Amino acid sequence: MVRRLRFNGTGSDGDGCPAVHEDVDSGEVIVHGPPLTDAQDVAQLQHLSEGEVAVVVPRELLVDWAPKERTRQIRTIGLEEFSGLFGKFEHTAWRLETRRRYASDEASDRWERFIETGSVVEDWPEGAPVNSFRNTIRAQTALGKRVERVRIVDQPPTTGQRYLLDGARWNIASGEDIRNLWRADANRLRLPAEDFWLFDSRLIALLRFDDDDQLTHVDLITEPAEVVRCAMIRDAAWHYAVPWKQFTAEMQSNT
Image (cartoon, rainbow, N blue to C red; front, side):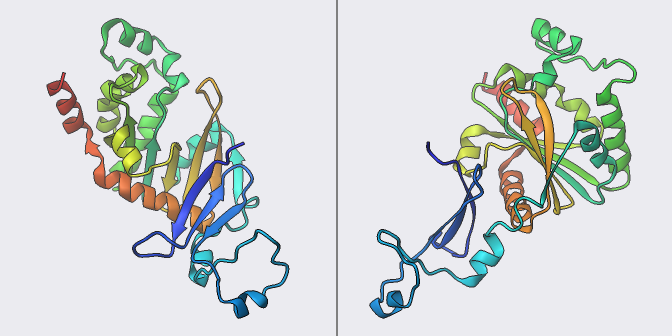
């Protein structure tokens, strides 16, 4: 079976070598770099078996990018506890949204009317969870905190992506800054196919979905290397993403 490898980082300023990757399933770490070739150096290595190759990497590479305490640093939480995080962050909450479909979007009359008319009407019933979320965001942004997200969009957009694009105006009215990025550009930037929130550049809430695109639980991660990796993803995505109003205007002009 082909491994699912994730790039963690590099100690190089230019050519990307040496670098560290991680097997996202097993947790094993793959390091590549220039080989140790001097015969006298190789002779000092213990337990170097036939077929194995020794590579040379800076100490800082492993300190900065090798996973640390993989098991202990991940804590799985339910959706109710996850919702509570939005009332607790101190400065910023940033989201990467990469999926083509979210099953939860389709479980409402709002979705049905969108399918019929092609337009989202903001008429959530009293007490709906989305109203509570937006009230929280409104209160947080009123305090000067930032709530931002980048949504990846296929070309042409999926039905679920068109629904989110049309309904984003009410998220923005609540205080969010939403931007969009074409998937081709996201792939060029090597953004991962992961959905996560990054709170205060220190806590990752990695969203987990089942085969039916339903959010099931959330993994909380505080491992420094993972936090830095997600911060780098945020910086790249945010730099190239297009503000929602401009993005939708360009979409309409191209149709």
